Length: 313
Image 1 (tube, one colour):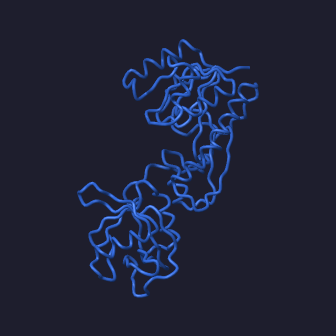
Image 2 (cartoon, rainbow, N blue to C red):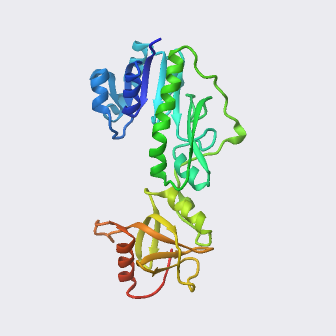
Image 3 (cartoon, rainbow, N blue to C red):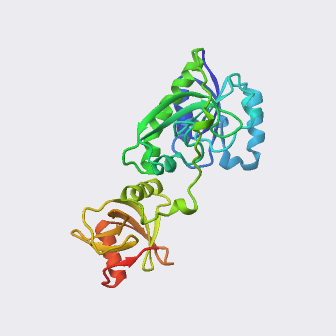
């Protein structure tokens, strides 16, 4: 059976579903810049591509009209960031399905990349689930797992794209073949939440272990990064590693330029971290610079005017 699909999200998944032979009746594109829009227009026609960014307040009216006219079999969502109303989901014969970049019910919410890394999970993955009126609460239709290793948030997001797309296509094909996966309700006692990091989640306690601090840095990288102030020099750290050597006199919360090649090291509760990459803010000039280890060390050394240590804040 060829499925009539109403699609919401980034263009790539809609293109792939059409390539799989599904009849993408219309596609509502998320209001972010993403590759694939021109290809999607060529594939299904410009009149069937509804851009949320362009339509603005007219979007709901256009979507409701399209749903009423097209009578889709299935609504499919991939990185659509708004709730789909129950009335829209009820327009489709099989309701809706979507992909979430975590192993639900763990890390429901908008930033499961930060949460999975910061929590110290050894593995994460993607979940395809039925769409419900509330975010990420639908029944599970399938999962794929991925070892986290030393990935930062951006790397994790990219690593999950391929299994996410593959699983979404697999589940959609199962609907088309008349044998969709058995929905499995999420277990309420296993739910954790993954909001955007804020407040204390944007900082570290320098009394923490090195491993815990590096985890927080990876979870925040590359955006927004870990903000530091070294004696008035504002830095955004985006990559760091365990320091093999550091001045023994440093206390947790102190920094020094140390070793060969010169490296900015930051004392932790059980060792130190070495900064491999950071943005040096432009102090009002707007000329922020992304510096590697040696250039960063030189900038810090110059700023500290030959003092050996600096207290971090």
